[in-house]
Image 1: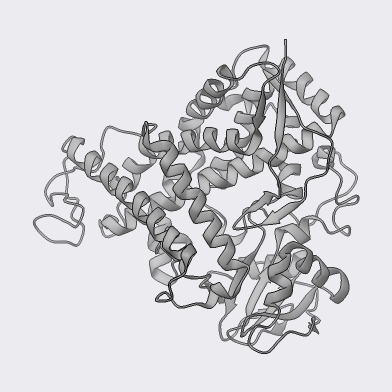
Image 2: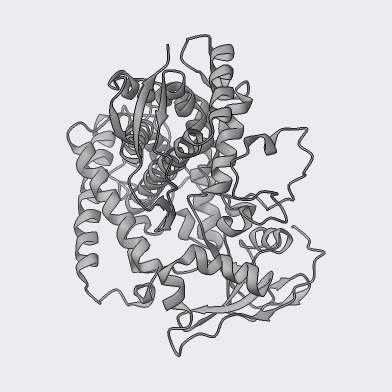
Length: 477
């Protein structure tokens, strides 16, 4: 467990309204509001999002202690009806023994060894997109990155591109992200599920489309899978489980190596598989995280590179030297040191997930100070990553700050785009390898030139550009 040597000095934050608390100011511009808490009040600030008391942390030691204790001293924050419709009771929303069981089943499908097997798919999808690009053409960067990462995650998760359904499903995910982001920034976060709004009706339709496709794929996988020896019922007794798997035979996707097959084949210590609903929840969560998070990170990376000719020139030199004209492979990830530092610096300046939280249980402490039970303890990669105490020139794009010989040491938990502790994002390795390989595969063939105007960030479910990023493609010889 992470120990903290920095005392927790609690200070009151801005005065809120009855019932609403600080929702109006937070909802108007969450990133600016959280930055204000850090700069004007201190490292441990009391505030409230609605009727619940909250505590906002800015010091890396306090953040590290909280993240390390989330599995035993904090409960998962119920962040609204909309979010639960998409991810269900997946591992990121589970707790206690249920969380430990699901994590043990899901974690193996995204371990580094498994991620290596998906690297060729990542490069192939990026290369196919670049094949369709033309010198001088104008593209919407976010849209293009979303199409690439959508294709990658669908092929890695389901083993195919889903053909004509891909764009419809991408739109369904876009609707889900928009509605969830809207609820997080408003009192919609506290509305009960029976309250119907136009946004919630749109979300229900989007989730229905997603569910129908995922369950269709699960049924097809089970129907087409070869029989495998050994028991698979795992606690369901004789006969068939709720996925239609025979208690005496496989039907678990044996012979395939995509993520869905691995979820279907997973068994806990008692030999039990994931249920139908559990497979759906984990698959959709991996899909949403693997698609939106990486496409957002890549979008911001192109924006930053376009405004930094020196960083882009150094990237060109590295790609020419290491790859010598061939497509990148997973073995190149460690060799592409500057490319990796670009991605890491992009994740510092524009972390897709901008807010993390846990609900304190009895006995929770920070810096030796008890935290009142039911307090929502918040921390933000956005504000911590841009704190001048830990990152000199915090708003400057400086990939060299991650050089091994960099003079400024970055404290632990001052950079945490994927969370921390045992609840670190399971797909962190997948996302980082994907970002490096896609960036390398595209940048060795094209430069993306964007207009010089500054684009502000908007906090939805993820940190997105506030306006479309339209780039001109420049082919590299």
